[in-house]
Length: 189
Ligand SMILES: [Zn+2]
Image (tube, rainbow, N blue to C red; front, side, top):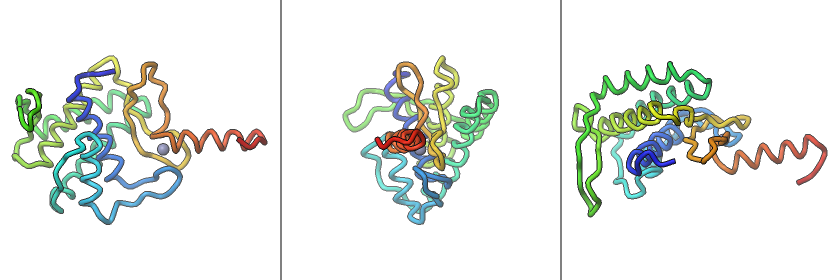
């Protein structure tokens, strides 16, 4: 699945921000709000943009607030409520007044960027992530946003597999569940 390579990167950033900046559980353990929000925010952005610059403390705080809003969209889709997800994304698009602009930098070809109203980095990412999720929800792949179904994990993912059968945030959780199933059957894997 390839909506458009730039939109794919934006959706990966949305996943990264939610997974690095929203508290909950990760791979079987409690995941509190990270103490080093600056490092966590940079890690989230680099999920989609490996060379993203460092972020400031203020930006990290703003990105954490945006991440909490984005999580709501993944949660709604995971429970089958695409209508609620669409309403939330529309709310974000309205608030950020997401504005498309063709941009070319760092030797890349022209590509679409989305800007928020304030000209801030976090605002631009809010507009971009809202647009990226809107592209997913408005496509035939609207059910491809998910929350990990392994026990004690609520990290999110976007399912880009051909048949759309992904259920876990990553191989660590997939293996955890497989191992538990083997044990339940009295076999050691
Ligand atoms: Zn997981």
